[in-house]
Amino acid sequence: MSNAVLTDFDPNGQGRGLFGVFRHRYLLQLLVRKELKVRYRRSVLGLLWSYVKPAVQFAVYFVAIGMFLGLNKSMDNFAVYLFSGIIVMNFFTEAVRNATRSIIDNAALIKKIYLPRELFPVASVYVSAVHFLPQVVVLCVAVPFFGWRWDPMGVLMVLIGFVLLLVLSIGLGLLFGALNVIFRDAENFVDLINMVITWSAPVLYTAILVRDTLGETAFTIYQANPLVVIVELFHRGFWVPTVSHGVDLAGRPLEMWLSITAATCIAVFIVGQLVFTRVSKRFAQEL
Amino acid sequence: MPSTTGAVAISAENVVKRFTLRKTRELKEAVVWLLTRRRGVTTESFLASNDVSFEVREGETLALLGFNGSGKSTMLKMISGVLTPDSGRIRTKGRLAGLIEVGAGFHHDLTGRENVYLNGAILGMSEKEIDEKFDSIIDFAEIGEFIDTEVKFYSSGMYLRLAFAVAVHTDPDIFLIDEILAVGDEPFQKKCIARIKEFADQGKTLIVVSHDLDLVSRICDRGIVLQRGVKTFDGEINEAVAWLRAQA
Image (tube, rainbow over all chains, first blue to last red; front, side, top):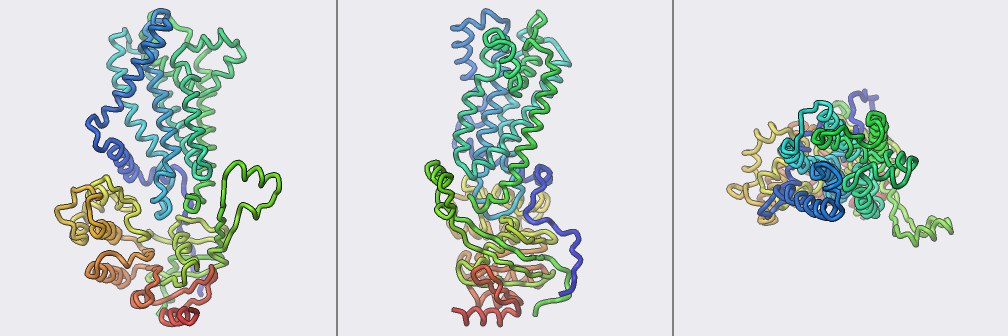
C-alpha cells in the first residue's frame, strides 16, 4: 500500500461537544418538535398544559404559603414574587430531569447511528425552554397590573439569569444524562435533588429568613447555590420594580454573587461536558 | 478487482475493541468486589476486534465477512463512529451514511412525512435536500397517500420501505450497509439491491456486512474475513467467500 496522505480526515466518533449540536441545529429543531408532538399526542389541551400546570401549582402555593402562612400580608406583591420564582424552578427541574433521561430514551438511535450525542440533552433543555417562555410572557403581561415600572437594569438581570439558568441546566443535563447510562441511580438522584432544590431557593420564602434563622455563615453557603442567585435575579427583574420601597434583595450586593454564580455555572457546564465526552464513548455498548 | 488507485477513504490502524460483560451493578456486588478485589467475579470480556488494520479506497466495494460473533458488525459500528476503539484508530473521509438497521430513528407516533424529515436529518441531510428529494422518496417507498398517516398504522413492509427509501436518498460518499438487504418482499428487495449496485457504479465507497454470501459477491469486489475479531483474509471477493466457506 502506498502512503496515502491522510489529510482532512474526520476524527471518527469524536464529538466536538456542543459545536456538533450547533452544526446539527436543523436536526435539533426536529427533535424538539418531535418531543413536543409525542408528549402531547392525543391530548386535548396540548401545549396548554404548560400553562395549566404552573397555574395550579401557583394557586396551591399561593393559598398555602401566601394566605395560610401569611406571606401575602407580610410582603408586597407576593404573587409576583412567588410566580417569578416558580417558573425558574420548573424550568430547571424539568430540564434536568428530562436531560437525565434523554440518552436512555434515545438508546435505539444512539446505538445505531452516530450523531453528536449532546443533541439529546440539549433538545430536552430546549423543550423546557419552549414550556418556560409562555410563562414568562404571562408574567410580563401581569406585572404592570402590580405596578411594575420599566427598569432596564431589572430586564438585564432577568436575561443574565436566564442565560445562567441555561448554562447550568445543560451542564447538569450532560453530567447526569451521561452518568445515567452507567448508573440508573442518577435518575432517582436527580429526582431527589429536584425535590430539595424547590425549597433550597427563595421561592416560597424570602432569602432574608435564611440569614435571620441560620446566621451569616449559613447564609453565605446558602447563596453559593447558583439557583438562589438566579431566582433572585428574576425577583430583581419582575418583583422589585413592583414594590415601592427599595428592597435589600438578599441582604448582599447582587453583583458580587452574580460573578460567583456565573463562575459556578460555567464550572458545572465544563465538568458536565468533560464527563459527557468521556462517558459518551461507551454509550453504544452500555445501553 | 480491488481498486488501488483512488484516495484512501477509510483507514483502520491496529484497531482493538474489547467488550466487557458486566454482570451486575448492584451495591451488594460492588461491596463484595471492593472487599475481595476479585475482578473476574463480576466481569467477563472478549475481543471483538483484535489488532485489525485495513484501508479502503474511494469507490471500493468491500464486504466484511465472518460467522456470528466474528466482530464484523462491531467493525462497521466503529467505522460509523457509534462505537469507539479501545486502541488504534479509524479515520474516514467524506460524508458517511449507515444503513445500519433502517428505521432506527423512526418514531411511531409521527406521520410518514414527519419521519422522513426527522430521519433525513438524522442521516445528515439538510432541510432543502429533503424537500428536493421528498417526492422521490415517496415514490421509491411506494407509500402514496399514507404519507400523512402515523407510521404505527403502517404494515411492517410499508414501514421498512419508507425507512429504506429515506436511507438510500442520502447522498453520502461512504455507505455502510448491515444486514438490511433482507428488507420487504422480493420485488422491493430487488429494487434495493439495484439501488445499491447503482451506488457502486457511481463510484461510492460501500462497506457491506451480510450473511448472504451470494448476494455480497454480486455487489462487492473485495472481501475481508474476520474470525473472532482477527482479520484472517483480505482479497478478491470470490476468494474471500471460498475461504470463509472452507472454514465452516
